[in-house]
Image 1 (cartoon, helix red, strand yellow):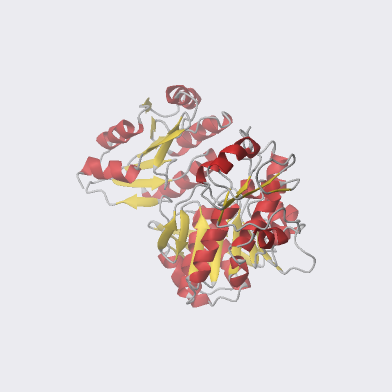
Image 2 (spheres, helix red, strand yellow):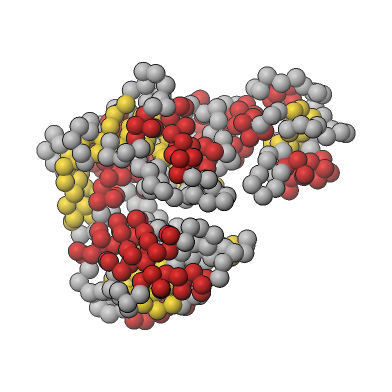
Length: 476
């Protein structure tokens, strides 16, 4: 593609009409003929890597002023704002060829996205999905996830692949960081789904305050043709206020006044039954807990807004499975083992309280807390474990730049004498210790890693899969 064709998407003059064979915003990924887009960053500025990009064969550069010499270059005030429309143009505007559905919220995005995909598949649609667990066409993983919402080049490349596979719908998790960093600029969503909002992702490299966090979430709805929102959540009005004038809205929740209202949630083994106002039969959800029932309620509301029939809704919800979300491991033992991504106090409380009625013996909760994150999260997780678990095994999660033993010590201090606990900083050894102490009827809940297959320490990620550790322990 000619540079002039690309820059026309931004209404920029073309310095020299060279051929562009690829796009890159990381100088290490530049190949000959690429257009290098120099992005500002929290830690580094892409401007500092222009020379390296040119050395690797970049045919042109897009950047904030000043312009480099010796290579065709175009200037924009905000390269991040430019990258989305640029990538969309390069890949032929693939988002326009499919029905895109955006899911946002502090908790439940991944589970709800899987529910939507399962429902749409039962309705006969070929569905793509982009989110925390990667990019999928149907059930097939086509790309791993570097971010919940990919950077624009990867995002539009993936959307092009989905359009080529004749996907009619794409379900996309859209994070607050994606909105802040303008990863979905230029995309129009057929519908947006708001789940909930609570303080999270606030820190030096995320959001400066809860107000900024909420504003970034709300900005998504400016790009949505319609929306479904949780009437139970006090932040819903802030989301709805950003919708285009006249955009249709459907609310859901457990409170009076919701368009789609949940009446009750009944445990049924490790499944749950959700009863809706006006529906004669409850919906079976193949996951435990009120929090998963609320995710299902959100999926039902959005699918009703899209005209999906009730049979597809019921069959999708009854069959959905989400890796690392209340996921049982088939342990050949007289006790149960479960893997879940719960990595803050609220998600731990929701999960453990849902599991409590189904466990005859003890709940042994194994968890840690992420480093370089607000210390308050550690005390909150300790409180959840103290209330709903019988024993805690404290270990590393993603310690990042912190000492995992020091993080565990903070959690232990917050637990105090509420429940017995031990500290085993090495997570593999901690899992072995938890399994060694399990008795018939117990549940060993491995919390915090879920689908993740790594542990991050000092800027490096080493491979670590809890599923593989469990297979090792049981000799699978």
